[in-house]
Amino acid sequence: MLLKSYSKKIFRPECNPGFESVHCIAHLDQYISEVLPYLNAVLGGFDYLKDPPAVIFRSQGKLITVHGDKIAINALRDEAEADKILEWLKREVNDAWANRESIVPCYDGAPKPKVIEILKLLPRTNCRECGEPTCMVFAARMAEGLKGLKDCPPLGAENKLRLEEYMSQFKFEL
Picture 1: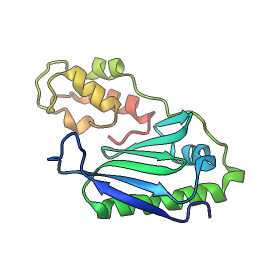
Picture 2: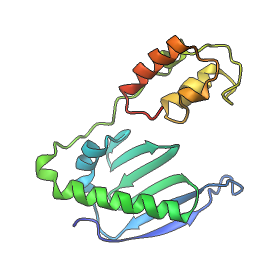
Picture 3: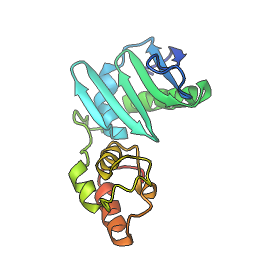
């Protein structure tokens, strides 16, 4: 077992203390940088930083960054959600470490969708029904994994299928 324990700090973002969500930093009691390329290979990290090593995951509007000595998670509902994600990551870290002999380490992030390719398939009406000021902003949010197909009401059936096909190659939740 590589990762045995950590201590966590839950806090509201200083830039806007009125936010409903909270952030979490877990300080790891063991240094785990050796497992990061294996964890990246198993979980398909959104991005992989080489110096200092870190793996970044995006899931359900959250940004999860795993460093050698800490884990940072943003946009959490509460401490219980932080605990659930931290325990899941602890299991994943330890499983990846235990199985490292059969895993090909990955030092690259996942391929990322191109904003312009997404924009080409959107209605480009800037209608704001998605909650964004322009289709370009919506396309950028979709490329980041923060918006999905359902968030664009005027998206036509044909382009919806084409956009779904395009985004499916990037392991995004649509």
